[in-house]
Amino acid sequence: MLGLVIVLQLLDQRGGAALGFETWRPTLYAYLLWASCLCWGQVILYGEHGKRSLFILPAALFVISMVVFPLIFALGIAFSNWNLSSPDGRQFNGLDNVRQMWGDPFYWNALRNMVWYVLAIVVEYAIAFGLALLLNAQIRARKFFRVAFLLPLMLSPVAVSWMIGKSMLEIRFGPIARLARELGWDSPSFFGSPEMARAMIMIMDAWTFIPFMMIMILAGLQAIPRELREAAEVDGASAWRRFWEITFPLMLPVSVTAILIRIIFKLKLADIIINVTSGGPGGATDSVTSFIFREYRDRSNVGYGTLLAIVYLVLIVIAMTILMKLADRWMKPRY
Image (cartoon, rainbow, N blue to C red; front, top):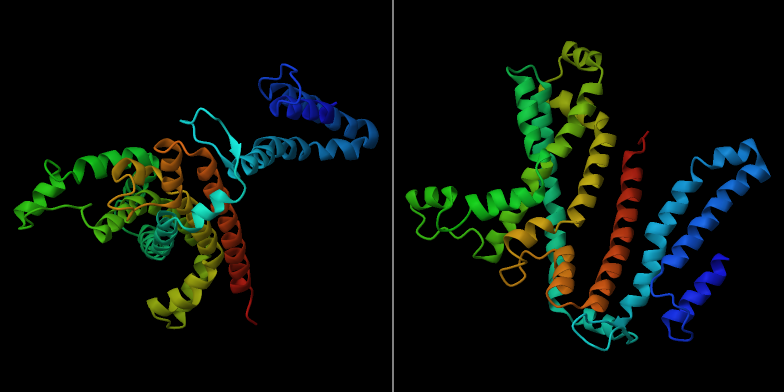
């Protein structure tokens, strides 16, 4: 039944038959019915073993419906010329979008910017590790500082972009700009030059997500047995040697996990850029995600924007697979 409904839906969409299927809702209903019958059939056919499969089967079917089907539909859009402002609708154009992407300097510029944004995670990790070490030490008001350092993580990146980028760094009336003028900077433009604008985007994004890495590293530090550090102190090891020989190696699994998750968040960087600079000046702060967003919103170019998104998804999958392989090899015991 599901296969028949899909065939009828495709015929209606391509104009081969007028069956009244204006939307894909009949296919959705047929898929839900097929998924229910599949789960029910597992219990009927396999009994208790079938019931155990129900712990994972509904989640897998949900992922298929929400990820795989839209991805297949997006592949059809990616090789089409579909501009929402055009009265002709969606038209297949073969590899034209691929050729346009290959010769698009703004897209390659956004990819280069993403390399700089990802490399900034090294500095963010160092700062987060230092803060975690500080909050793990016996200092006064430690609980207060733990809550205070977590506050940026509780804010939305959109709120951060308006609070800092649009208000505090505003060139005319922003408090930071006024302070810079009082210190001798005649025209404090924080987003005027490409390098300065890119650095400010990195700082705002880091201020938002460094607490995330910090709290993960702090949890790892608290899990290290105190006896190890005490034994090293008895043996006469210095503070730096205790850190380099005991703390840092034991923190490698937590550190790698925090860095990988941070890279995933960084690859989706868009909201701060869209709200503060809109990719400017001259595309200097554009990320791939913000560039694709503007392809949809400003140019209404759905076909080309979808192709860029699919290519970016493929690059992310390849890059993350390589990083996870390298991290797994790096964390294996050397002896």
